[in-house]
Image (tube, rainbow over all chains, first blue to last red; front, side, top):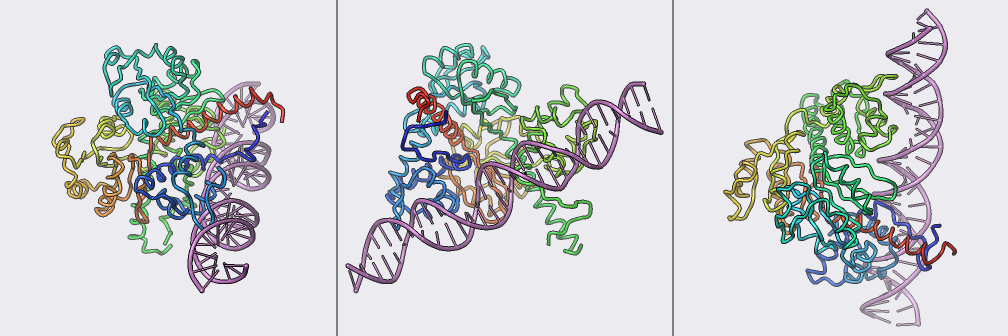
Length: 229
Length: 229
DNA sequence: AGGAGTTTGTGAACGTGAGAACAAAATGGG
DNA sequence: CCCATTTTGTTCTCACGTTCACAAACTCCT
């Protein structure tokens, strides 16, 4: 059932590594842009903000693309990582929910340059439909199925209010979308085989607040306690 | 050095747990809003999208706030988690970089309702300064120090282009900000004691793309291989 | 009051990820 | 041609996180 082609020996890349590959890709692009053609694991690790042992281990899951005593060819490694991630061609993406965040996402040029193409903007509200955002006309949410079939879309982005998120996700899944990026502050449940990643702005801030509070309490305790038990 | 007040026995909450507390908080708020006053770990776990054993273990790090045979009092647990995270009062926040994303962040009502107050919007560009966004006038980036001192700001949000991110971060750190939420697609380096969390839209999509590609390859291999080695 | 039924809190087993340390492989100089 | 130097790829160990499984503790009904 899990037998594969031929050349991939133990092609199981840990999830933690997968999450870092895009960071390496970006770092390599930055290096290439500044004219650097070769780099050591140490160089790249610094650029990516990780330690070099971890970087080498991550890259070793992909294959053996470096040269001992020399380092990595920037362009070659960049292509290999892009291929592994699957962004050597563009992925069509639909964005549902064109509020403040949807606008920002539609206008974000980083998608285009990093392997994604926004093929449609959808919204359920009459007042938004028909508007042109980032050069694309917003279409009614009902057109989702038609668009997905036409462009063979596998990835959907949810930027609606929280209450609508689960409905939109259900609809996406029913139509055949198998990867969802959810910006709505709500948990969406999906069946086996569908991937969901969530980005939640206030959760990130709350995590920072927790650590911030601890810093403050620690300082306060140190000041009043004086270190004694 | 690490001695604390009195009642906290082993107050070391794992990072993975800290990252989930805001999710529980949101789920509890949703339950409270629908009039539910008591819930079991199973109920809450479902609402939060985790399994109940993990939920109970997470909560056990905070203390023993449930009642065996009964469950958790929604309001009480909600308060305890909010207190632990540190969002019983509002945290002042500054946003630097008022482009598309900065606009969306400034308009995001979720910050306000979840423990944060945007006290200033800053941008370096003359063309943006003076505009009113979400009822707040955009001020020049130079005013950062003044604003941070006036409002005792500890948390900064970076929504600038990638090239500006490190400079903005350096300036924030120099002025005394100790927590940074970075939306710019760049790695920012900060000294010990400063927390940085990053949110990168295209990285999230690339992670989805990786899995999507694997799904496609798996299906393709299964179709051509027929299952035999 | 006592027992049946629930549900929490936690100890123990398991799996995954991180980091140190080193052997293998390449280059370049003499 | 050989040796010193550099840097990768990998092994081993430790720490962290997840899940299972169950005892402790509470309620409710008789």
